[in-house]
Image (cartoon, rainbow, N blue to C red):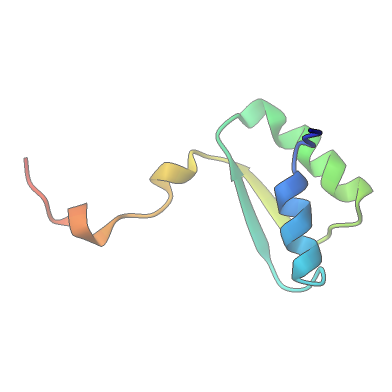
Length: 68
């Protein structure tokens, strides 16, 4: 199986007909330049790629008010 860095992001952008805004997060900040290069080569113009752990991007309302 072949995996391309940024492949899922490129696929989602294609499903969106390269219209709108697509935010992509990757925990490995060293891959950001490669992802941007691959997206550029694929003609994806809507993706904004950031180095960030996606598991920390959204607060879970169920645990938001937990004290411990």
